[in-house]
Image 1 (tube, helix red, strand yellow):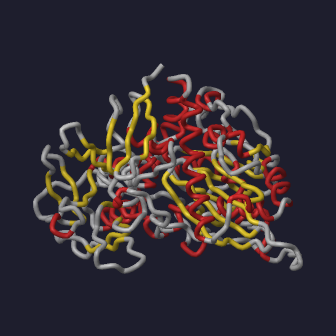
Image 2 (spheres, one colour; image 1 turned 135 degrees about the horizontal axis):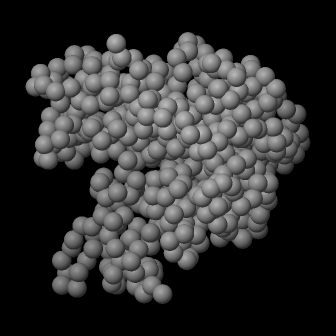
Length: 532
């Protein structure tokens, strides 16, 4: 059994407990104290630093996500390290006519509820007026389970490694969601007793962990979830301190196809889209749903954390200071770029690069032939931003030291390009296998859902070969459709019935059992537009 240590938080003299061997950040999250973790808890960004006070009065700055608890501690948390409720850019939420035009009882009292999209990397939470169907406020925060790995398989592996890890990962996400909910309530002067229901969508692994159900069956062949049906459970049963509030989860279709893609299908009104419409819910896990002539086809692919910025050398979330677009006018010169800066503050300087920024940058590398078709940087000394790191490895400087927030360059490394290749290779291969199973050569229409996909440029996706080469006017960006679907179910129970009905019509295309998948995947790692 792990030793328990005392952690004293100064100057308020609050005491919390932390298990030996776990990170300081985990102990803080366990007690609903959330710090910034822009790099995905790798110790790279330095945004979660706290001041550790020693017995002799000296102070040491430590990175809380990598600092292991081995003794009693006294710490001070700088205000700059604390998570604020608005730090992550939220994708727009768009509802279909079937929701907007439904009959509303104007005489009914206002009822409030929470719709949540529980992503592997990011949790989006919406405070809603259930009577009117309006979103009152929203917040997006980092999923603290990233401490146990970027993807679902890493977290399933962590659960299998040690008894009690399932409960711990559940507690991490419950505390994060609860923190977000309380922030939203405070912003509207509401009390938690006024919340009538919570609806949560997510991939099967995330939903299993939230419900406290072991997801290890998803991690081994034949990759089946422990349950499939939609469930209503009491929020208190999974650890929420919100009172006896029903928590609704949507059905699971397979081990990797869950309520998030069903919510997205509701929000884009997939049944009324033309045959051949491909819905892509793009994030750490890519979920694909294709409307065929008489049935639906679905599959999933591990696109990886690069698309969310988590695994990049200078990676960070889509928050103020993140490079989100790169423009290279001349290959020999340093690029232009834009950063996320919603308040247009002159104090915000570049600090890192988010997922859309690296996609934009790599697409520009391709257009200006700064990288070869296989993804390697071109050799030569004529490209000024292409420099060697201290280990002699090439990297492309987006932001020079004197222009960045902390005096360190912001760059894209060869490893980052490889991460993009792996993600886009998995995505386009999954799409092609799905199309083949449904009898299509190309999709009639593509709908891009998910917070990450919302901010991507269509031309960048086409340039990198992330999606099939179709006319840009046949590509539609739909915002956080999974979150919109959660809100629709929250406000109108008929959409839950619709989600269950959609789940029953889906045919799963199992990529893991297809021997040709790896062969095609390897072929898709290159950048097709550069081939002669």
